[in-house]
Image (cartoon, rainbow over all chains, first blue to last red; front, side, top):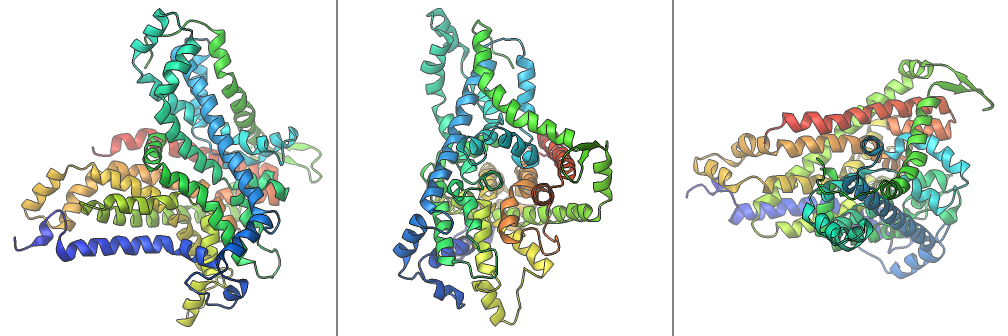
Length: 284
Length: 293
């Protein structure tokens, strides 16, 4: 009893030290975001004459309204909309095509099935960053620069989700397909009435991961959206910096940064359980 | 693994896989093939024709001083990002794991920076360390330290490392906490009863049992540092000063799109492709076996 340090769970002073350690860590992680928030509530003069204040000012509504309706190159509301289309397009697109093809490779025997399986495995390895130049040429040849399909399609082109759904379908009891077959249900009927409802949680978990993945894309939108009206918010922030020696308009830029974080952060917090599940499963 | 019960039909399954085949063929395999093909040519200065050079682009790259420097930069950068983000995450996870109550609350608080895009993280850190208006720069100045990552190569590297590692802490924390919570409490309690202090328990029990998680995170973080940090580098330093933060992915972009040197950029893509493949194979095969369970 003399030495509390030996115990597994901390009590008394030790407990408080543990909390203190965590709080310091969290403060370190939050500080950049807090500063961005403060900068989005003050005026440009407060920032360009350093040091800037560390507590919020009174220009929140004014700064956010200016960013959303005017922005610098394009209204941030437009960029938010573009990001939303891109993120939802990638998430829904990838889930839809992956569900269909996973259903086909698990529940059917057809010629080319093995080849298809290998193709899936190959796409697991190649991030879009590695093939940017030729992919850009493909998009340019199709006339898809500055278009939503150009933003979405190349990022849908990987079979990671197919792989996950295949793993899940393999665990679905055979009796269900058997019963459906005996009852004379068509394969698609089985897919829509039984398989899809059973995959609900997996679909939702994957949706969270893909939404964030799509929302946070940077390099690809940077290459193919030359028109400010098509910029996504994450890549649009960098475009707000002046190229010369002028001062960047920090309150607008920081308001935009905060706005760029809100949707994915809400998704993560609101769907925390699914998010953790999606992360763990998509890495296994 | 195969299903015992399957449906009949050939056209239906082919129709079902068609969308995926089309999209991956056009936007994945064709461009990847093009990258390999283009890496064997150099375009003439007017971009009108291509000249076959075989492995010439690769030979040129491997003897190029800047490319080799970029390799070294990437190695230093990814090791630092991995060590910093995993170190901080492990420290926080060990603390959170010691709590009986409240670790869930801390998890919620620590989880959401995962959602912050690398490019946004870059802008946030750039703002703090901006040479003219940055708060941290100002306070460092007040302490007598003159921070200037625009000119100083070491400071530029430090800043991109911290900004990249910062965004990754949440992810590593989640996996470490899950790993720690999976270790049976009885084992640790037994050691505690035998008189093992915290540090001894950590070194002899927790750390070895955590090794699958650690190895997994090691590979995943290196892949992250190689590819997904493009946004951080582009927003903070644009590869400068004097290419001090030009990692390989950034060089593919700057040579291909800014420098318009397509042959070299394609050859660099192919080299990266080989590196990712090796890392992926390591992740799937080697790590699974080497770690203790």
